[in-house]
Amino acid sequence: MAELSEKIQKIATEIEGMTVLEMAELAKYLEDKFGVSAVAAVQAAAPAAAGAPAEEKTSFTVVLTDAGATKLAVIKAVREINPTLGLMDAKKLVESAPQELVKDAKKDVAEEAKKKIEAAGGKVEMK
Image (cartoon, rainbow, N blue to C red; front, side, top):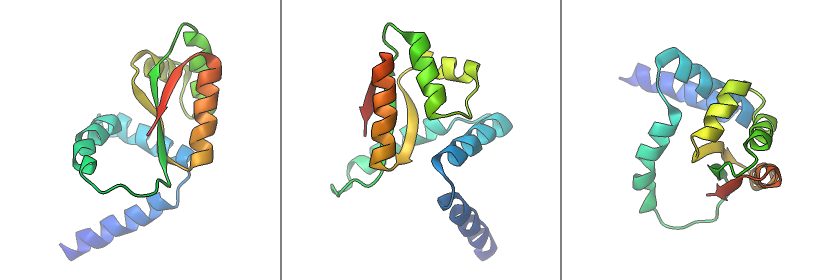
């Protein structure tokens, strides 16, 4: 079991050093490779975190809640935020709102993503 823990620790250390775009690319690869969705895992883990004591937020998640009337502009904004997404993936993400756009980002990165989506006519929520 110790060997497995070392292996997991090594992987976790590598992931901690990744940028948000690299993490998004990794998530997409894992979804394609294993047929799983990172969103489902996050939604399952959310109730457990709800009981935690409040502390200063250092990372934010930006969730697209509604594409609004200008769906095409929102799709373009989503691709600006996450350039690893192809056109069809961005379209699917926008059409299946609410969806996470940016996860565990610094406040300035999250606010920039929020501004882009709102300027395009979409609605977002920062968590």
